[in-house]
Length: 428
Image 1 (tube, one colour):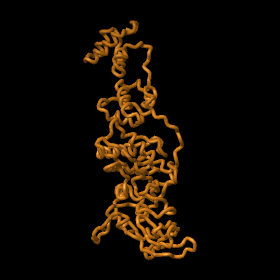
Image 2 (cartoon, helix red, strand yellow):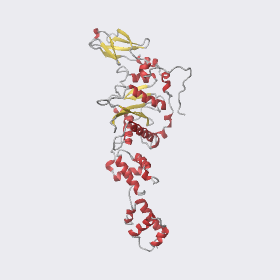
Image 3 (tube, helix red, strand yellow):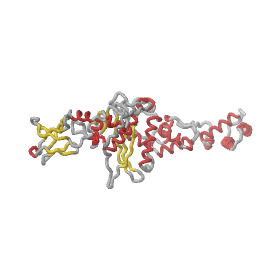
Image 4 (cartoon, one colour):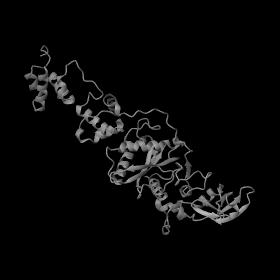
């Protein structure tokens, strides 16, 4: 048999068709006067690369990143990449794993898929300039969180959504992604204080209280206390013992981790058509967070191709445990008063002799109209004091308005006292 001429195209295809119809390779080899190894070879070529490849010359090797895999793998990989062009090789591999067409089929590694996309669809690849990542401003997990909202997400049912993302930059971990409907009668609105507090309470319950939280300078977050009277959001964090940090003016890279996190999540959940509704959006966000945190390899931070959970399992160990039913026990109004007492806020008096501190107006007298006065807080009697900027003379003293635990936390009534201590939950 070794001296016979090479098998013709029709003989190769006959071996393939015979095997597909249930015949034994031994019988097919005898029928076509070739060795069993030769018959097996052409059967495997047809099975893995397709029947059409049997017509190629024996000297034309099949080349390409996915040449060792069944032809259907390349076909489905291209299908998923064209359907979701912003998804990378690791995410496409997850799609292939869940693809029922490829059930039981051997799949390539992400590196082989990436090379295949460079060969077959380079126009779909995202060209990115490689820049060194910004080092996180913390030295241990939960020392600093970044939060930010991804706004104006249109859904198929007409809903306009905003997603508040909470990210741990050192561990490169998504702590929370909460979707809210924000459409109004004429347009859409920003997230309000109570919505942000509710989202953070969910994250606090799972991961505990961090040392600090960093935000941008949206009106709900305010500005550093050196620049203006703190917002209720800042005072809420202060009362819980959390330092509120702000990004610098016109320095978007200060929030680089959470801003990049927006793109990472929404590249993963992107569909050719808008998602159906808020429930579907939230489910897609939850799945994407789990995939990023626990399954897919990451090149962010010090992950070096491992999922963030593998590199930083301590993310699930809270520094300070939190339970929503115990928030009033954790919140310290004296801490808020001591914080306010550190600062002085210059204010311009209006033409009617009033200034606005926070959301409330205070009268200092028409004699100071259009002048600047300094405002301070006295923690002894919880009053605002107004001073002349020239000689620091006290002009007026007024009780601060509506700055109570209920106003700051949004918890109107404390839970009834039972006499029993509250046990904070631990992850174990």
